[in-house]
Length: 92
Image (cartoon, rainbow, N blue to C red; front, top):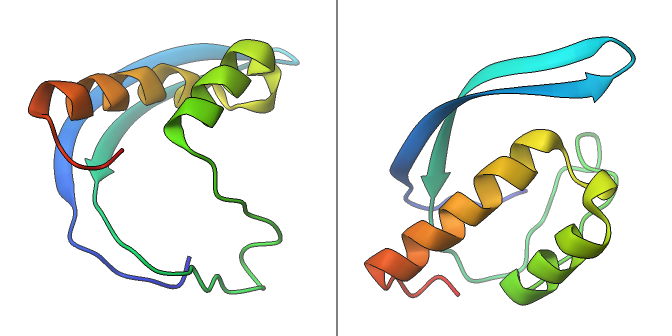
């Protein structure tokens, strides 16, 4: 996305999800969090579209349109929010 920031590993997990068409995602994911302020400058050869959304907007949209989000994101997102709230981090 055209920027760098320090990251903190917050957890890792294994998940398995049916993604349709007889396909299954079965992954071991590491989740990191960081904070950066500025305007992203993504490489147009790697990113065709992006948008900014608040945590609250994402929570509402996942409930309304879960099919728009990858299975891994729907699993990881609530865990990240829980981590932030428990640590009282200033990320939201």
